Length: 229
Image (tube, rainbow, N blue to C red; front, side, top):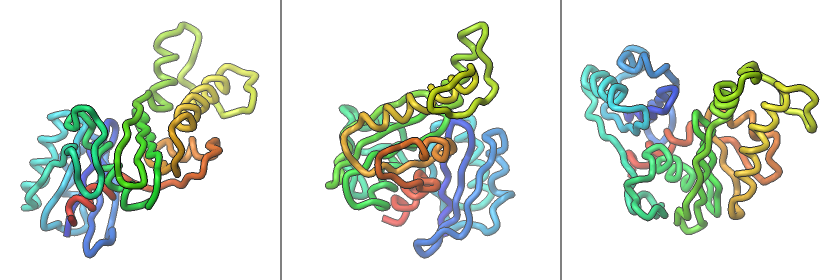
């Protein structure tokens, strides 16, 4: 049984996989990463992880894996892996989570794809039908956009508004502006079927005009593919 671990900017997502199927998935706040071994319903034989949360979280995961007795592998971006060819000028600079998401997307969709990870940051990557990564974008996530407006202006609030076709109040204007900016960035990318994943994916999906679907925990899917290769 394989334990897949995605240490993101806000949460740690985990999944237990056996025989090509997920047995369980869950999430923890980063501050509770060291207790990962306590929340798993079964003990894995090995673990694979990616980390963009920094060294303290990585160390907490190492300790949890040690207590489980599960050898732990960390993945990093490569020039080529699992049918995906890295399009970055310096392949190792691509985030491990984006690399895992690309591998997961390659397994989930057979054709040109635009992979959108909607988390603390929003990342948008383009993958050709032959598995060639052509590059991508990084922009603030929806909450980060709202927070930057609240922090940088005297009269704007972090309070949540609603998307409106043409807002007539400030809170809705902020919410609509953040969503439209993200949707616009996605729809300006080269053509491809859009795969959406991450905590804010459900907020973005209704406003996309492009063919798309939501894929839960796409990074975990990519980690599983690497582990099973």
